[in-house]
Image (cartoon, rainbow over all chains, first blue to last red; front, side, top):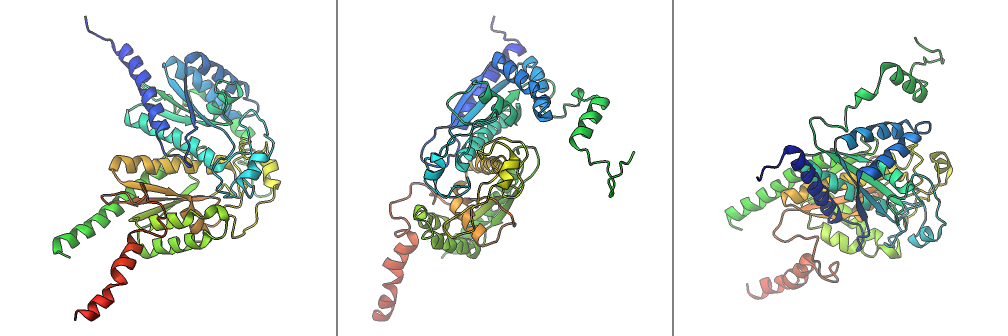
Length: 216
Length: 223
């Protein structure tokens, strides 16, 4: 029998799609003559770790919490993820000044500053190389008709959890196939009370009048 | 020139302009960190406008020893049919408050207090910039590039053109970083496979040295 069920087709299709996205990302434009952008695909186990890590940052970042919650649904839909990263130092010697140092040599001499999100200071054009690769992967996914979203939160979490190594700046591209888009219009997570609570916390001045009075 | 060839030249230019507008649209609709727009895209398709930028690039090539290649970039850009310049609007003045540390200052509050590089001839972008904001430029650039590839349009990326446009003050104020995406509709891409010393020896200089320099003598002697 040569009948393949839809679930199997989607599973295989997603595997191929992620490979094609990685190729598109790898072959995308790069500033400079070298292409050192690292691209990896991760499985559901790593995705779950990343999702839990994101959710654990809820007190610091409602954005990370939102993405942490969304990861659960992405895994349930058999979604896939690429993590893309690059080293922070510059080998370009363009001395453009965007990093805040007059020369690339000065930037490269500065001690690395570690943080959960990324390691700086970094070269602007290395940053752009990462984002160009991410966009190329997303553009490939778009043409393949997949649901897709670019996440900085998952990329940063992957770096913090050493899911991707030997890089300093990261981003992620997630894709999924299914009956509905898991990446946008995720209102099922927002009860009215929860929404009000977060909104008041994040935008405390929204209901204030000119003299600071709170409008009910 | 034959009438049909003149018509072809006009149509070719028009095709480049239509493609440039579509590529602009693709750059605009590419992803953005935070999901909202912070990138402006300017379209230049008038040869005189592009020439102004090329001249500025050539001037800037002597402002910094590392920018010698600006002259070669200018020689290539002169062959472009259209130029899109993408500028990052908030990266200079308004950090994203994500505390990403890509700039190396751990939090955006610290980064706000850091003194920017001065506006000097040898400095293209007065960093430190908010990289999370400026990173949107990567998405916009590849949004344009990916459609250019699909349309079969030749492209070249020139940060030198963006830096020159910033110095010329033809971009939105408070632009942190700008990068040019040059487009060409010709049989041979003017942006790749470039000979050595291209800033000195290219189609224009060859025409000038070999044909136009000698033509007056020919015109005088043989008339």
